[in-house]
Image 1 (cartoon, helix red, strand yellow):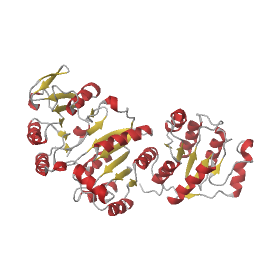
Image 2 (tube, rainbow, N blue to C red):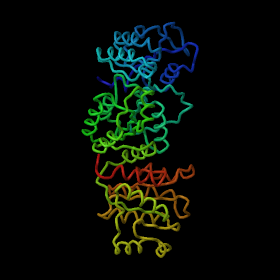
Image 3 (tube, rainbow, N blue to C red):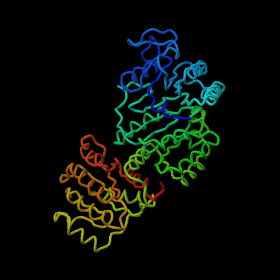
Image 4 (cartoon, one colour):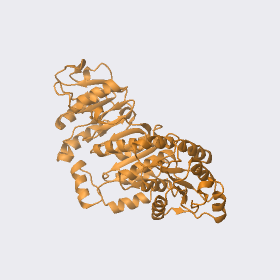
Length: 454
């Protein structure tokens, strides 16, 4: 099925708007798209009339142009007939926002919409979903804009069975400085599922990283998913629920999915080109670093810090992840000692992790980064920056980024997530250096690009 007109429609019809309830999901979707997005937007209610000054059409056939995408927000038992009307009118695809299908025991209704969709090659997202966030074309998330944050435009696509988790992930990534290309909620995935969306985003020029929240695969689709993952060069990040017996029950009641054996799933992912994130924090870290760097054969890391404790935690994390904190030759330690500020030459530690101490200034971090990024025995530099140090300025990020760009080697940074440190964080992120807000998160970033898996 061709998903182009589902993801990037030029015209949409919202079926099920209320003439009396402005908080009806269909009304929120209609208003949002009518005022903020490029797709020409129409609304339908059998009673007709006016809504916010716009014509309310009584059926899809009344709309004065062929519609690319229909958004269904009506009772579940009304949707099969409405789908048939849309297909007869030449609509190219649909999103079923409504619940009330297999997740609530109405497998018969879900099978009916599958029959209609497959018979007519009519691509459908849902049911029981939020649909699509695909700026500047469309946003079917029935959530008022004032309740959300403005999402940053970028190159990470998100696909999720859970609408709530999807929104959480878009917020989390935005707060971490990661830009979103598209976000798709697939709900019960009666027709379109992870495989279909993966195939689309593999070819999508706006997307570089593809992130999935997965509850379970339909029979036979898991194997196809892994085959597609292993044939793409784009990074694929996966977060899985249903890892425990109780979690599996929750998955089944949510979208009627089979979560499967998690141990088997995890082992299959380890053997594929995808990377699995343990939680939302790790998911965000993986997406951020992979949106900046290609995975490569990172084995030896140099840690640069101003705090021995931070360096020790990072060293422990690297060891647990199988990443080597490379030994610095004695002659290189002595050479670097003579290059840094005289004020720290007698107190800094030049073995890995390199502890420049709280007396370090910008030039000490920059000199040390340049020194080790030029060494063949170093694959990646991990910088643990403490912006409360008196000698550090907000210019340090841009200056280090210039060194990283010239070398081509990855640099990952840790900076505490405090509002007043935003200017330091932006100095790195706006110049292409990913920033984690915990030492563990920074190590996770290094792990995502280590081993040349992707």
